[in-house]
Image (cartoon, rainbow, N blue to C red; front, side):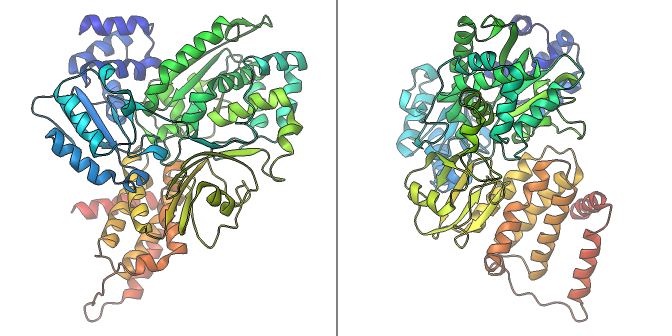
Length: 596
């Protein structure tokens, strides 16, 4: 073990910022992080053992106790539930002879659930030792169980188990016009760097991760910082259930994404870039590394790019199963080898980002669009879309539709048009933007895809009239409670209480007062949480409660109160408590009272 870990540390040049990548290699080799390994890492990297243990405990793909030689995880996303993943998980557990959440007695296999694998268009899906499994059914489970019993190396497993398709079903402004390698950079150097920033500004490009901040402004703010060392970060950690477009873009259009990052580097004066790749996308890692090597060979990365004096290179860093790392400051913390806990803001990353230096963080689609704008000009992009939402949006569509996959639309397209294209019938509602987004009912399909109407990072989950919408809300509530980083009380305690309160109602044990309490808890979590996870965790409840209150009311049981009990007075007390300034302390007291 000492020799193995010494080799990893040597390859990572003793950099503590590479801790996640180091731990990934140890986890992959031993199927857990041994105690002796932690001590050796602490010594070699000059960081406390407690810090390493904290990082291991933070990420769901790391374990302090042994997992199976074959680590199997089945997606627990609502889209997989809709395809029968619950029954499939139970079937697989029976075939393997191991309980869910356990390791077999011989240490051969472990089986558990994971939040989402980013394969929502080809589920039920899962992972084995980090590699994607798609289109799972009983026949596939039989095959997997047999391969495990035979102890076949993964390289000898049938390729169809690992088949990941792009499913690009509708192309538009960006997907129709892939760029020739180097075209954007050559155009930038010919036109001029400042002039290219002006074109991106003219295009009206806004961040495609969901927040919609103007891209040119972010890049300019970073470029104007006095600090000379700057960084470019591509956020490819799309952990939002129902979202998988970035996986497809990196599989087919990665060269253009890298080109966009390099254009950004030329504009802001950065020498180093990072792609923070979602841990579930391990299957893309080698392909992306080979593409970066090809770009270096062709003079498009490294020193003196195209002979124009630009020095810039890109490093790929794999996440380790933490949804919160999609938040830009948590992502930066993770890049630095730490637990992905969001920072206080301000300062923002453009002034103090990676290692405290000015940093641009944009998502995959944004960099891809920036490269296309560099070649085609700002007007080419700006003339598509609406007045406040220029260009197009790439969507991940899954759920109850005949043709799940990737679709690209001009901003301003109606929801009904999108539903018609993907073959969605008898639709009850659509979850737009994943669990943190908005649920819309079938009375709202005239609304438009746009920042000024329905803004989204790119996820559409469709539910037909045969579905119970509360199943979705229940799944999302458990997702947020599981994924909370635990930093602040309103989110740590609040998401757990939301989960418990919703469980009580969904299971038929709630009263009218419980629905009122649920809504007030939602407001506490939304208004007092530290970061976007907590601030949006209540959205599935609030948006469905607004549109389908009867679904909640029909779950309530009749309750008789003791003589003299004043329900109205009790609810008024609850409202006053919810509006107190010390909301976090109030939630903490609720937690204490529950334990007592």
